Length: 419
Image 1 (cartoon, rainbow, N blue to C red):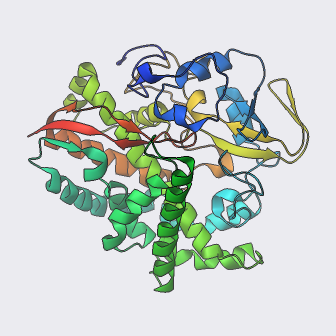
Image 2 (cartoon, rainbow, N blue to C red):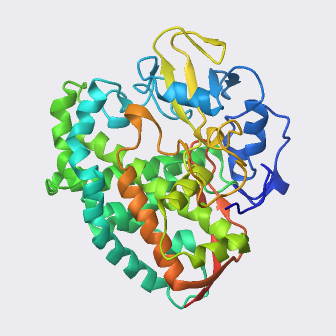
C-alpha cells in the first residue's frame, strides 16, 4: 500500500519550505537551516554525486559526509576503521566529547560490548514485553490528562511521554519526568531562532546541567539494581581508569539522551503526517492494532537522528574517496533512509513497507540497545491514539529544533476531536 505525496519537496519533513535558504548551497553543517527547510532535496542531490561529499564547519574544520545507504552502511558497520571513541555529533569536536572512551556510545570494541553486557538483560525483546503493561497504564494516564482538550501544543502537553516508557526503566522519580523531558530535547539544539549564539549556548549548558543534576541525585540515592541507573555503577569497573571522570554518571546520561529523543520525535513526525494526509489517517484508523511494519516505516520516515559522527583510525577508501587517518566522517542516516537505490518510492510513506532496511536504530555493534523498548512504546502510543482520537489536524505551524543532529519538533499545535 502506498500513501503520502511523492517527491523530496513534499511536507515529509518540514512544512515551512517557503522559508528555505538557497538550495544550491552545499553546506550541511549550518544548524539554523534544519529548523526552516526540508533537507531531503539537498541530500538527494548530494547522493547523485560520486564519492563522499567534502564539507567544512564554520570554523574551517573539514569533514566527509556519507549520504548513500551503502556508504552509511559501510561506515557504521566498521567500528575498527570508523571509531566512535571521539564524538558522535558534528557540533562536539575539538578535543572530542568529554565522555569519549567511557560512555557506551563513545566506545569501540572490545570495550563497547563489555559495557553493553551490563545493560543487555534490561533491553532484550522479552524484557521489553514485560514492560508493556506498565507503559500502557502510564501512557493511558497521560492521555486522560488531555481528554476533552480540543486544541493544544502536543509537545508541551506530552512532555513526559518518553518518560512513560523509559522513566521507571531509567530509575528516575516521576516528579522529575517533566523537567527531564524538556531538558533532553533542549540539550540537542536551539528552539528559538531569535536567540543569539551566546543565549543558545547558555540554554544548552543549563539543559545539560539539569540532566546531570537529576541523574547525579538518582545515582547518589542508590537506584534499584533492575534499572539502568542501578546498573551504571558497574560500568566504572568495566571501563577502568578514566582520569577521574564519573563513568556511571556519563553512562546514565548517555542512556537518557539516547532514549528520550527517538520515540517522541518519531511520534511527532507521524502526527504531522496523520494530520495532513487524509488517506493515511483513513488507513490508520482501520487497523486493529499497530503493526511492526508501520513502526519501521515511521522510523525510516522520521529518521530522528540526522547523522552520527565517526573518526577514522587509519587511511581508508569509501565510495572511491580517499579518507586519511584522523578524518571526521559524518554518516547521514536521514539521507540513507530515503536512498532511491534501496527504497522503492522513498518519498512515499508506505505503512506496510517490507522489506525495510532503515538505519534509524543504527547498525552493527552500535545498533540501539533500546530498540525493543522503543518499538513497544511507539506501538502502545499509536494504539492509544487510534482508540481515543476521532480526528486530528494541525492547528498552526509546527516548530522545529535548530540542530543538524536531531530532527526535532519542539512545537506541534493540534486540533483534536476525541472519541
